[in-house]
Image 1 (cartoon, helix red, strand yellow):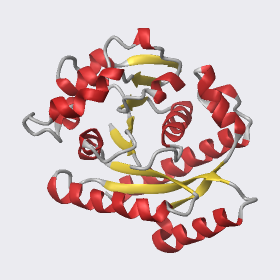
Image 2 (cartoon, one colour):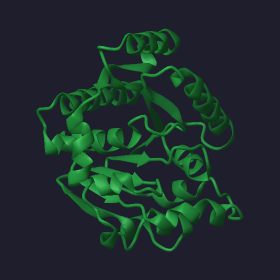
Image 3 (cartoon, one colour):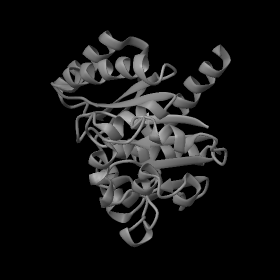
Amino acid sequence: MIRIVIANQKGGVGKTTTAINVATAMAASGWRTLLIDLDAQGNASTGLGCDAAQREQSSYDLMVGDATLAECVRPSGIPNLDLVPASVDLSGAEVELVGAEDRTGILARALDGASDHQICFIDCPPSLGLLTLNALSAADRLLVPLQCEFFALEGLSQLLNTVEQVKRRFNPRLDIVGVVLTMYDRRARLTDQVADDVRDCLGELVFETVIPRNVRLSEAPSHGLPALVYDHLCVGSRAYIALAQELIGRLDERRIAA
C-alpha cells in the first residue's frame, strides 16, 4: 500500500479539500483507496458525509492502541474509497502519546501489513506536532498543498526542514511526491508572482496542475460530499481529476525507477 501524507503546518491552504478530492479521484480511477483523518477537527470525515454518530472507532482509537486499522475503517459511500474517521478525542492524543515508547512510529506500526487498499492518504492537522510526525514517519510520500500567498515559501521552508529531520531520524524512505498550488486566482497579480517564485525555487517538484479558487469546492463539504461528486463538471473538480492523473504518473515513474 502506497502511503501519502498530505501536510502543511499552515492552516487554510486547502489541505483537507485536497485530501478528500484527490482520494475520490484516485478511487474513481480504480484504485482501492483509504483516507485516514488525523486532524481532530474531523473536516475530512465530515466532508465525506461521516457524522459524529458514525465514528465509534476512529483514528484516536488507532493511535492509542484501542483498535486495529481494520476495526477503524468504514466505507465512505463512494466506490473504492474507505475512511478512518477522526473524533474530538484526537485533540488530546498528543498529550497521551508523549510518554509512549517509540511515539513517532505508532501509526507506521498500525499500518504495517495492511493489504486491503492500494493507496492510503493521511490528512494531517495544521501543525508539526506528534500526530503529523507520526504521519510523516509512516508515509512513503509527502504531498504539500501550498496556497498562493505572500508567506507561502516561508512556511514551506519550515516543513521541508522537518521532512529532512524525519528522513534522518525516523523514516529514510520519505520523499516529496510534489507541491500543489491551491486557491489560484488568475485575476490577482500576486498569485502569479508566488507561483513563479515557487516554481523557480522547487522546479519539477511543483505539479503542473493548479487548484483554482472555486465556489463549488467550498460548498461541497456542507453537503457531506467531495466536490467531484457534488459537481464533477466545476473547474475545481476538473483540476483535482487532473492532479490525480498527474500524481499517478509520478507514482508510476518512481515504481519504474525503483
